[in-house]
Image 1: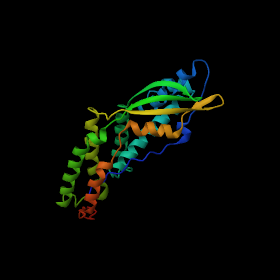
Image 2: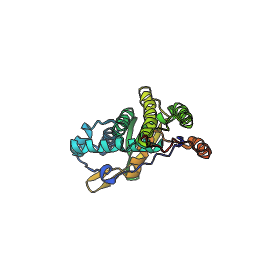
Image 3: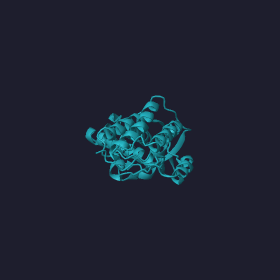
Image 4: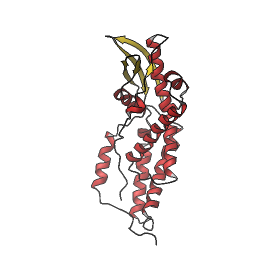
Length: 245
């Protein structure tokens, strides 16, 4: 089994979670909208939900569930991106979730201004994308190539499939964990978020939240696709089907 597979990270949003609305009253609309968008991003990525719960009326349990869903989704996306198979691994599956929490804790953004344009309110958001995938690409590519050499040499012939997948995935996670402490950022991305008003409530669309979500972690895998295609065209090297018995 050749291990060199980079897939595009796919974002699946749940409207019930991300379209929570809040009642507009009191302070200026622009200020409330700015606070709402800032608190929504903070709650989803930084696990900082005090302002979110106060502003929206959501419970702490609901905010915690929203955050956990978000980091679990990232963990699943990273598994898919690197072609890992650890969903049933009692050690590595929770370790990947903890890694996702560490990655999102590095999220950098600013809510710059809220304003009205043609009777529609907008909030300008600047995102500084976490560049972890590009930052670690060469180290991971080197690791994968070395791993494939060991596979070709028969080092894993006596491994059962689960142990083989565990061994490979553990090395990928090691590299990502080591890099999180010295994370780099890509060029800032500016997003114009529309405030949707309905009666006395307002919220942002799934599309705008998805734009924010995609910008938080830089996920352009286009430059990896050639490498993946070249690897796929090579002869397959895999451990034997031995069960180790």
